[in-house]
Each structure stands twice: as structure tokens, then as C-alpha cells.
Length: 345
Image 1 (cartoon, helix red, strand yellow):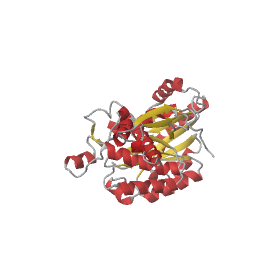
Image 2: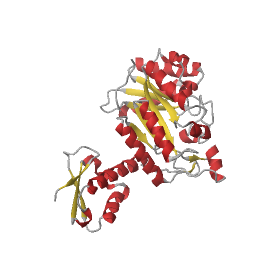
Image 3: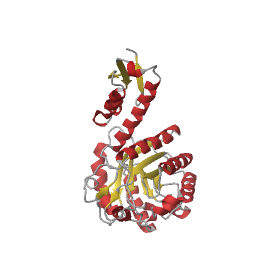
Image 4: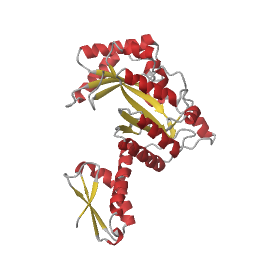
């Protein structure tokens, strides 16, 4: 069985809009990656690996990741060529394994048989939704059943599987997104990523937005929803390894990203919301916290920023709820990270 060490150094190699049989309604891949449509050659891949390796730190494994396009949708000779370049790096012990992102409907026995001579250990599936009506509205070109079949087949081949979902899709609701998360959790992936839909220039969603046919989620609504989705995966012991898009000059360019719940620290906002909810739950157990003259919150030092919230918003919220109380934070290394406790006066 091909497996991978948790949290390896992941070196991304982008293959923008290559291998995609569909133009999804939300997609303008050239904007997302700021890359041309040419596949990376051997020299470029090696240069990227050499650039990233100094950041390996104490991680004992390195993974080369083909992101951006639909890797297993590439012509077999192109996919095989990239895997052969990666395998040279495995032989040289510069990397240990390979990861790729692809669509569920590209997971076939023929494609997976093609990968078996190589060190492909992890596949991330762009699921986006498990609701066929939402998938159709987004012009995805695959179904929820395709995802179920893909996960089953990847498991049979011993390949670690991650799932990616998107919130704010046309026709999606909080209820359908929550159901997507529950169905994804039932598939028992190794990890999950959650992305909010951003309205990108020249995408079909951009056209709908201009016509008033699509309204993107607000940042507050999106953070609240993703926090609820995170809880579903957490309850099922499935790691959420990323929430929100990575900060980049392209995505922060107003000419490229027209609208949507963008924030450079979106994941931090979600974790801060989760910490606020935990704090409110703790405070609800007190007889009448509004009359307390002091409320002392204990938190692990690594989680203090999440408890405080972005620009101290959580503390401002608590002080507005309990104006008579003196709310303070005490760092307590004995507490588990991402937990909060009401400490005695």
C-alpha cells in the first residue's frame, strides 16, 4: 500500500488548465495560477524543487505536487512524462512521493494502472459539491456518484485521498453545503480542503454576477458556514488542512478577483469564530456571567490569537455581551491548543 508521512514538505508544480475537459462556471485558471498553458519541463521542475528544499526543516518527507489542472485528465504521454521526471527526483532522494489534484471522473483503472510504476501516493479530488443540482449549475461535468466511485477506486489502489469542497457555488445553500460535508465525511478521506468561491474576471460566474444572476457570499456568512463545516469534519476526525485560498498577488489584484469572500487570513477567521463559539458555550454554563466583575479566560499560548480574533474582534464581542464584566485572558500551557477554560477568580 502506498502511504505518506503526515505533513510532508509539499512542493507545488502548477499545470494550469491542462487536462480539464470542462470550463467550470467559476473557473479562470490562468488567473488563479498566473501561469501560461505550457507544461513545466524538467529544468523548471528541478529548479522549483531546489528552491523549496532549504525549507524542509525537520520534516522527514518531501512530496512533489502537481496542482492547478486536472492531472489525470492530461494525455497519458504527458502525465507519464511528468511522473517520469518526478521519479528521477525520487531516485536521487530529493523527494519521496508525488501528489496530484484531479477531477473525480478522471479516476479510472486505466489511469491508475498508468501511475503504478511511479511514486504517486496522494490524490486530491476536486469534489466541490455532493449535490448533483449544484454540480450541474456550476458546469462541473461530473456527478456525486463519480466522486464516490473515485474514492472507492483510489482506496483499492492504496492511494491516499484528499477531497476539496467549495462553498458559495451557484444554487448552493448552507443546507446543501452541510449535506455535502456530511457525505464527504462518510467517504473517510485522509484530509479535506474548503475553498470559498471567488468571482474571477472572465469566468461565467463573473458574467452572471454582472447580470445580477449571482450574488457572492459575504465574508461573515462564509466564515460562519465554513466554521460549521469544519465542525462536521472535526467530529469525524478528518483533518481540514486548508480553508480559503492562499494569499497571492494575483488573487489580491482587483482586476482579477471581481468579488467574493476574500481575506488573506481566511483560515484564521474561521478558527477565531470556532474559539468564540467555544467561549460562549463555556460562559453559558455560568449562573449569570453578566453580573461578574471578572471573567478570566484560560487558553494555550499558541491559541491566544484565535481567542482574541482578528483585530481583537472576539474580545470586543465578549465585552459588548458582558459590559459589567472585566474580561481577561491568561495563557495556560497546561490547556490543550484550541480550547478555552473559565478560570476561577
